[in-house]
Image 1 (cartoon, rainbow, N blue to C red):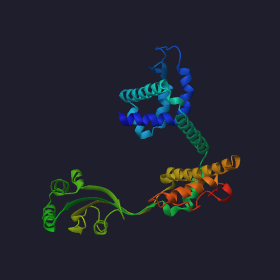
Image 2 (image 1 turned 180 degrees about the vertical axis):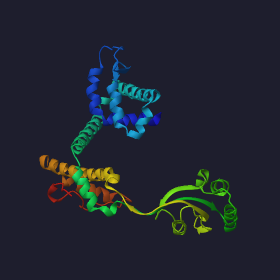
Image 3 (image 1 turned 45 degrees about the vertical axis):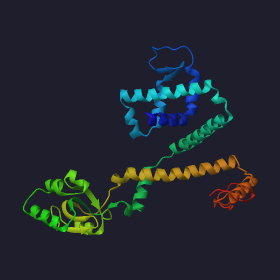
Image 4 (image 1 turned 90 degrees about the vertical axis):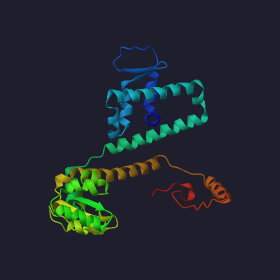
Length: 315
């Protein structure tokens, strides 16, 4: 529950502007028959739109936790606790503290900056022509190397491995022996390792595995992990992936690249609209204090994003 409360606090900070706007409308007479009303805390309402706003800020996978009635009840309980603590803080005058006001203002600025960047990035579109062009210009990126589907039995000594191999050659079931004898965690799955490509395994194991044909079993293979008996269940040759197989991947990659370019351009434009001048005296004093501090090797080198003349330089 403590982790959930912290998460809700972070989410509430992330949507602080939205919550602040809703607060004014929360006060007043409470209609418990309102289908959009979720709860009331000290006279302030929690509406279904507040819950939706919080859920929208949660990553999709984590959001599944709150899909059930029990999950939503847990979320509402945590939100109610935060609101209770917030009301108590206001009652004690904590919200009037200059330090607290600075923190709230800074969180608001962070939210506005993030919203501006997200709104700008959301407008980016990737055309089918761009995707096709990228695919044809970078075909070498979109191929799969040969891969093998493997099972194995891992043992501590060569004598143990030879004994297991002998039993396998007599027809005993590989998966059953893996469960019985293998000391690899994969033993619980009958020794299954799944699909493997080159570079995923230690060289000795890889060389032996890729030398096998489908349905073939290795002799005893020694590696830094111990002694293996390997079974190859399937083999796939290298092949070129079709455009349709990688269309979504390319779209995401191009969107990511355009997003970085767009945000960089947005920052540069903001620098022009809102020039920044820094006080070099602040950095001079900071450098002196850092040099004077015992055991602190930090020094003010003058290097970085702060340029001569007090202007913050672009990269």
